[in-house]
Length: 154
Image (cartoon, rainbow, N blue to C red; front, side, top):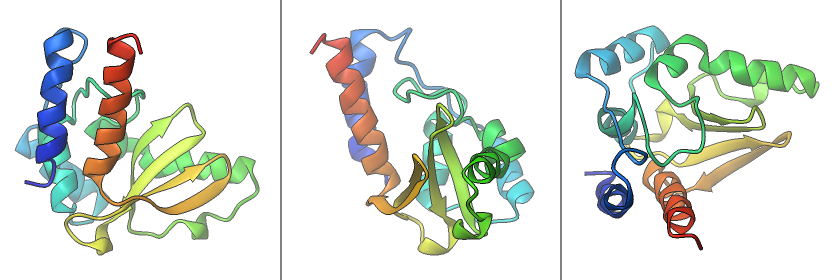
């Protein structure tokens, strides 16, 4: 529904190497547990993402996107980075769901209050980038295209 184009492009990546580029979905129970623990209603596009690849995502270049990472410490990662940079955590809204961390310097998040298909915001190199991409699908597509280029040696 929200991620149809990304799922379609991912099929090409899977055909290159199914072992490396493999997704593992969350169960509905895991998604509901995450929602309960965050005390937020997850946007529909993010729920779809989790049910597609929330336990393993063959196109993301990070090891901190699993539903359990988000459940256990998603805000802690960003709080640590903001503290190091002497930035107030109040810059990040309370309904932010930090769903992706890369190397401790890129934090992608959505806001529960921005509808079922929210834009993705990033905290990157000490700066907040509002509306970094229009949707979770666009976020996924950028990474899928990068993975395809790398897999094809371009």
